[in-house]
Image (cartoon, rainbow, N blue to C red):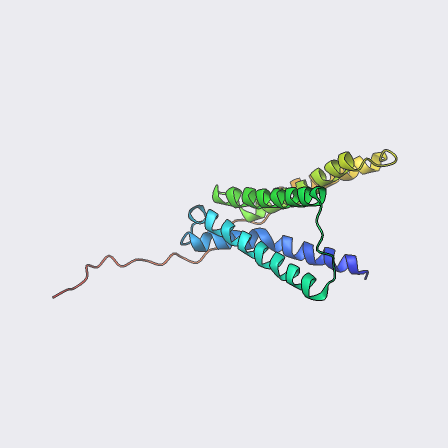
Length: 173
């Protein structure tokens, strides 16, 4: 397997588990209710990005694997990419907060995003020749695949019963 494919597999596995992990984080912050913990969950998504970026930067400095030189275009587009990623993560957080189910949110996001990515990439980096009809069939199949997943998704998750609070008055002397 080529090295770039290893990183593709890593990304698929990580992003595939992202929505359920964020959903459970929101629910844990909200005492079992994902509507009550979304911004705290989003905060720690940001903390995780910061930790990962800091570790990679430290590695780059120690190993001198990449020059520490910056230009305005690179900084601008990289920051825009990060902002778009953060806003996408925030969109997922709020979709889950507003009763979105990970079994619905994730297929829509992860089927829709590649379609948008393809179109934006073609606008930003115009292909030398126009794609053939099978390209557009592929886009329709990606959208249809998401629809099939949604139409045939499993039922709601089984959750453990919420702890019962005691209603007995305390006995103080």
